Length: 84
Image (tube, rainbow, N blue to C red; front, side, top):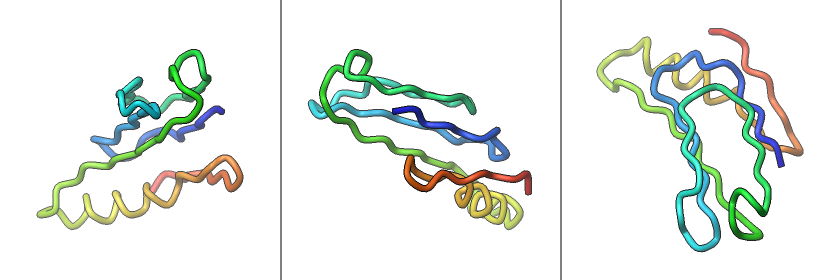
């Protein structure tokens, strides 16, 4: 499976991949494509978390974070993120 991440418009976004043994197998802070296979994950299944860190005291940061979050989809429903 390949996860296609759009260019980052938000500072502080990360992607974390955990395998079924609950080991963190990958952490990415860049807007890049990530391909998951049984060989590089180490197990048959995995979980992916995409986190966005924002400054809750900055209204423009909150708005940008919400807008950027709408751009990520899944393999069956890919979405495209446009620059805010």
